[in-house]
Every structure is written in C-alpha cells, then in structure tokens.
Image (cartoon, rainbow, N blue to C red; front, side):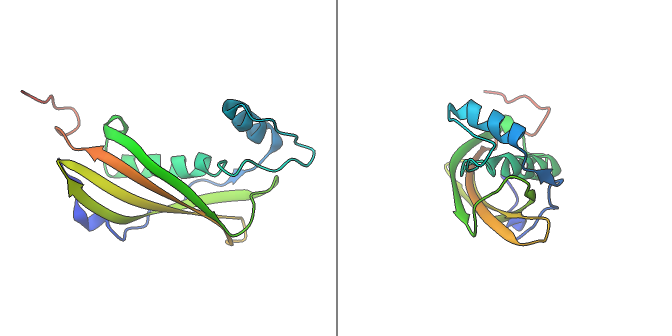
Length: 142
C-alpha cells in the first residue's frame, strides 16, 4: 500500500532528550572501528544518526510503516556547529518529499537536531525507499 501524499510537510514530535556522553560516543565510535578519546576527542560527525534513527523509528511507528520494507537510500548532515560532549540533543523529523516510482515510495525526510536551548546543531536529511506490498499482518499472494 503506497504511503499517503498528505505526509509531506508533516512534522513529528521530537525524540526524548539524549545527553552526549563519552561512554555512548566511545561505543558508537568503536562500532565504526574509529578511535575516540573522551578527554577531548571530537564526536564523530555521523553520531547524530543515533537521534535521527530514533526519530525515523517513531515516524514509521506512527504511520504504521514496517521497517523491514524500508531501504535507506541516502543520509547526509549539514552542521551549524559540531556536536560536543555534554550536549543534550533532540531530533524532530519532518517529511519533506514523497514520490512513487515503480511501486516504491521515495520518502524524503529532514531531522532537525537541536540542543537543550533549542538551537539547531545540525540537520540530517535521509531518503527512504519503501516497498509498499501488502498491509501489515497480511500476506502477499502471487
């Protein structure tokens, strides 16, 4: 079932606040095979994906879109300033575009990553490719 075009322009509630702490950043960096020094090392520039993914999960759940039908097509971040240890961040996802191509929904999202003062830290943009198929809980037939 295709995603409804009325989603374009909708903004979803922000994620729960997440404090950027050395332990979390070190675990994230280790998953990338990158070193991290909590005594002053820079937070990896892809770290905001942690929040952007939470925002995407909430969006998919609210719209009853199955994650297993999603292929992550593209991700990019535009920074106002670097993420720093001690930041408390939230992400607010908006659907910015939607088009159907060959039975797939191409969903463009933008996640504003803000600090505790509400200042924009960075914006994550993602392209999600959704294969409609049968609605949740129903089997497809050949």
